[in-house]
Amino acid sequence: MNIPRILSSISLLLLLVSGISLAAPAAYRIDMAISRDGSLIGKPAIVAEADAEAEIRDENPLKPDEGFRILVTVSPLDAEQGGKESLKLKLTFFGRLKGNWVQRAERSVTTLSGQFVSLSFPAKPPETDGKTYDLVVAINRAEAAALAPK
Image: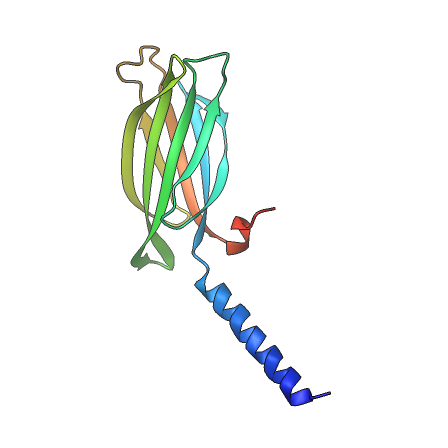
């Protein structure tokens, strides 16, 4: 048995594995509290890679004028403040009308990790039901392993 060759192979394997883990993209946990007309309707959380669009959807085929769809993207910025990462949050909010998605608004804000951001998405034409959705969002760095399929 050639011990130096085995040790060399193990060292190479460890180097490759550490290189792969260093190249893993940043991942963020996005926690939301969603209210409709002032009443809390959900507290979804998702994990998404940096600069990748993630989606949260709530729809009921039996209620074609209810539900929402949110597209969210988190992008890290170079700045840091008080040890917190500076992030750009982009949200696109959709309501439903006759079973079709209607874009209500697109918002982009700069925030710090762990800080709460409040956004409101009132109904607009052609929606006529007048429902207003309010979101409170917090973003924190997540483990890259959280993105692995289970």
